[in-house]
Picture 1 (cartoon, one colour):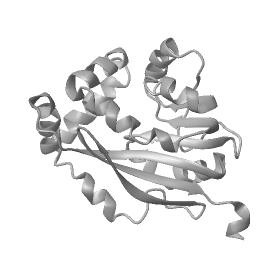
Picture 2 (cartoon, one colour):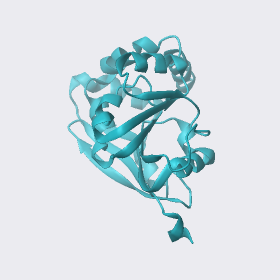
Picture 3 (cartoon, one colour):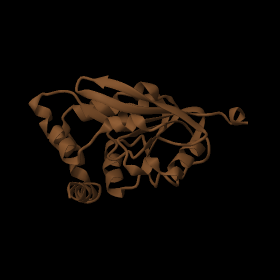
Picture 4 (cartoon, helix red, strand yellow):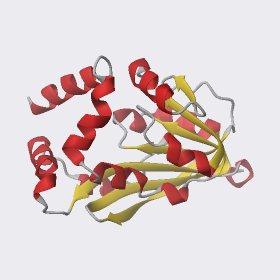
Length: 210
């Protein structure tokens, strides 16, 4: 039942309620959400950076100094409308991660934070391997475990308890993106409010695959 209500709430938030997304995230998570999202930014750099599931574009401004071109992709047109109001220098495209409208080898790095189940789809892995240039990085901030006991973050603890969330189980997976051209591993990142589970992979050069 909890998952059904959460799904309906997210469905509304990603469409008609898109303008409320950023203030609601701040209300529920405070600074913790942004700390978790940005904990792996230092692993991102290159000529062209792609953000999968860019939402309202909150990270676009932070990615811009790290690349000559930043592309944000999301399936929600409502979320992209909010993003375009904030950052006019970012290229925003409405598309599915399983069919990226980009040429092969376009991106030097790909960034994704707190993705839904699409990131596990084999078609998504195929597309990431296709558009990522050889030697480029794919960085996915998958989940976080709250460690702060400050009353400000009690809503997060309640939400995790209701959903019986267990980020640590992710570490038992041998790979997040199971693809022969993507070689990666799990890492822990510590922030003032929690432990973040990050998967960092590299696009293997074609000549290495033989």
